[in-house]
Image 1 (cartoon, rainbow, N blue to C red):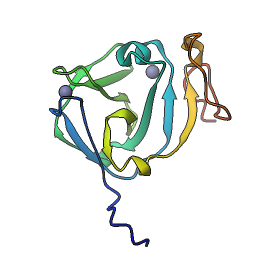
Image 2 (image 1 turned 120 degrees about the vertical axis):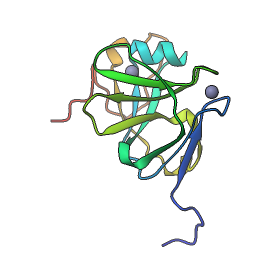
Image 3 (image 1 turned 90 degrees about the vertical axis):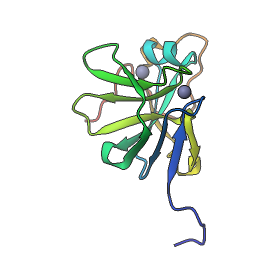
Image 4 (image 1 turned 180 degrees about the horizontal axis):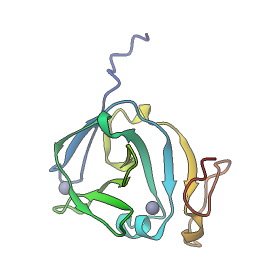
Length: 139
Ligand SMILES: [Zn+2]
Ligand SMILES: [Zn+2]
């Protein structure tokens, strides 16, 4: 192992600090350009770092909101920060990368951009990153 003191731990919080979590073993990072991610973030897209549910520990539980029957979004009702999104039946949760405080260097580079058919004209896609009209087409 390297001499880095980093334990591989990732921590995160919302803007006001009420919601806190820690996580290990980040999986793929995906940028979502869907309309709901754009609206809830106020930005061109939401970058999600995926983690297996078992690898996330919530110190203070976030509030929940569902736009559709397919997925639940977590946010902080006090400050409005977007925190995570999970599809029902998926063992992974996408954590909004902007909420991460410690361990940002452990997050993987973006693997793909999804829902680019809903991308606003003013947003630029990153060069060399696979982009999908809808959700990821894994196989
Ligand atoms: Zn908050
Ligand atoms: Zn989205």
